[in-house]
Amino acid sequence: MIASSQKTVAEQSNAMQHYYRFQSKIYDLTRWAFLFGRHSILRHIPYNRMDTFTCLEVGCGTGHNLKTLATMYPNANLIGMDVSREMYEIALRKMQPFGHRIRLQNRPYHFNDRTREGEIDVILFSYALTMINPQWQDLLQRAYLDIKPGGRILVVDFHDS
Image (cartoon, rainbow, N blue to C red; front, side, top):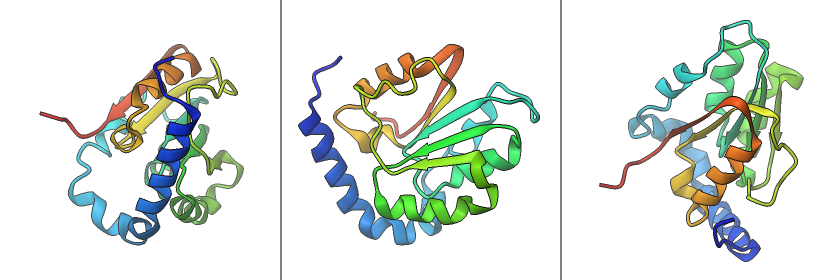
């Protein structure tokens, strides 16, 4: 594990709670303007429409990608995690039509969580890693452990040039 502590995870969770308290109210109205690639990354999921697979989205926000995935892949098992209570509640409302196919969790994804090890087919980070600083490297290591052999870790994010 790269040197991140539980205190760092807790501090980051608190920072995200604070940031998204306001941002959640305008998120879906504003993010289309600068979250480029958010839709195109979904085309990299290596499954056919009727396949059964499990996809975890870390930092699912308001559930935008999960809703799209639920429509694109009607047999997929989808899991969304977000640390922001406000974003989680918006996602819960959006996911109601999909019933049990989408499970949402209001908690952080962190290195020491071994509950999904080797069980996930696709892990998606859509503009989440830059918001999960400084432990983004830990999360990629965790994703590598959680992904099934032959699975995919898909990332779209800001580039620091």
